Length: 274
Length: 344
Image (cartoon, rainbow over all chains, first blue to last red; front, side):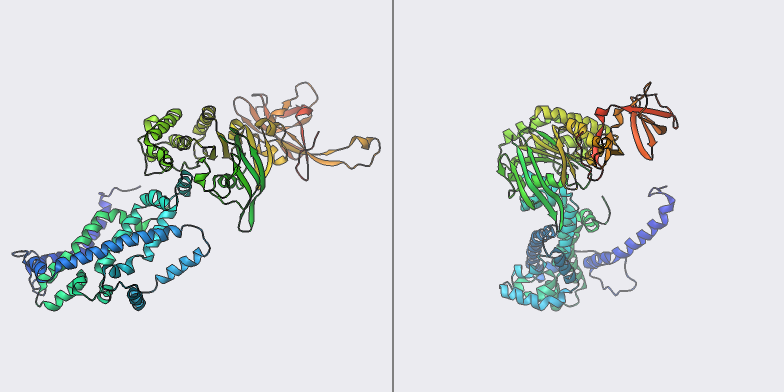
């Protein structure tokens, strides 16, 4: 018999989950608390409740470095990465659901490419970006994320879950391949879209190594580079540093909270029947 | 409205040929049913006509125009799928109007056609609902409505009733029959259910292993099955087939023509109770299945299973003696090796 979530038999499980949640949220709380007080993180005994909280650290961050410019760069690069990755991953994912000679080899090639760490491909990536003439531009920073193999496979799995008769019906109704994707498959693949958006956002927003290599001009720097620059020009800035971190985190958290339901469904799609 | 021609149509998947040169002429407004067991190639043939499968060899023509190289959208066909294939993110109206929007038909005309189809199919109250809010029967009607609004040259039905329960299937079968009277369009209907085939078709095409076994009206295929396969497939319960040997009349006069090994076929309903006369077949009932209007009785005759449909309450229990006779006109003869029908 299935027990209701509120039954006493579930209490130990709930207690364990509350403790785990607490442990996971403590660092976030500590960052926010320190950003509002600026107190030394090594102070003992630590204060649980912030004393005299203020927003001066946030004001410092905003005015002492070109934060708005870094934010704009990060937003533009991330938007380009998301738009590009949706376009290319959807196209590649759909192509892999079709039958064509050599499809299996392409799937194997893509899967094996997932085993290569990005750091190992950074020199060829730099050379390609340079050859394209987009070094030190927003497009150049977004370029490596314009297509990601894991998202291609997420779209492939999502498209394969759509009954083939729907695609046949669309063909009989007069739709070409692109319209089948945009009018039939994508509206039925919201989870895959949400997953693609969130993963690309996180990868692009937090990317440090590639922007460090691809960007020369201070004006083109993104937030993670700005954070490094901030550390190099400021001293004894625990409060301001944590305020910077909070400002960087907020957009990512907002996007994840908005799309988390579809995101989790997208990552687990295909795991169960029906 | 249009006729349809299949000329030596073949289909192979890799090295495996699944449709072996099918020839068929379907006239304008004819309702043709493709019937056969699973894997006989009937759905593949339908999909080739729709343009959803490439043709390996041969020619398909709709209204006199060869359509081998045309996309499905350019063949002027509409198709109803086994699982309805309704777009789950669109309302009933949007599902029905979808194809018309891509054909440049103006809004007023789309509304008129959808309303008309909804009225014919009695789905007007559900027009604003999503497919998930409909029952199986309602979804099937929407799927048919989506085909009707197109006003195509040919309707294609791919086992449209097989996902419905038995009661709803009978009801929908009647509705399709009624719909046919109102929308007289050339139709190809695929099913593995011989009752659907018999009740709906102008002509039945019986397929087996990618070949046409017989083409004919329901009466033709029932009364004069071309082979033991057709005899066994059409009719429920199927025709009884008993081994026999034909002795040529000349043998009596000393001629040297060898006897011919045959299968004698007789339908369960053509074996009748021998009340007073000498029985042709005698045995004991091994299984008795009362159906109300009649009773199916199984018996073993010389090691062969035989099923007979008798009026109710003649045989009530297992083990009772069964005495049967048959009109010779109702006997069918097939070559025992090839299974081909022999002229009487």
